[in-house]
Image 1 (tube, rainbow, N blue to C red):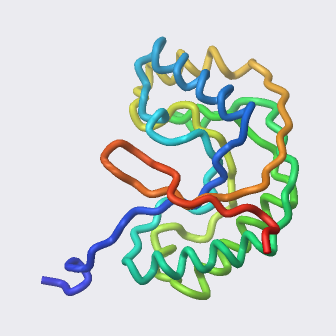
Image 2: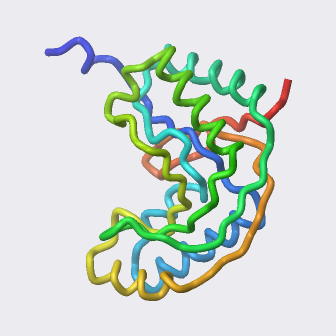
Length: 189
């Protein structure tokens, strides 16, 4: 048996958990989708924008991740984020589409660079691809017919919200879904 397979790992997600009032707006839309199309998987995670997708980390790597989070948060400033429309990754994902302000790009770049420098193997399953931030409303438990119905409903809808982003989080995975483990406030010394 491979020695690596004996090492205990936990799944961690690096994300911006959305502040109010956008948090509640997203959650309402996710509940609407669950009630009308029986797609409930998105409700297993707090409304968020992923910075770095799920990583399987050992206890030692988790400590490194927490150290990185404190350092990155201390050098990134809060920023405004606007959400203006809906989008889709056919055939399974419906999302709200935020703009990509420089602060969000900077936060992503800092996280990616820190991980590549400190524990690069954790990014092996995520090839270097463009960052495409989005706020998931439905995914995974969406079949083609439901996707087409949902997308018909959302594709021409508009939303206009702008919020201040002043934190990023590490979320941990459990059988109930993703839970906030730690919040790191931006530009906190």
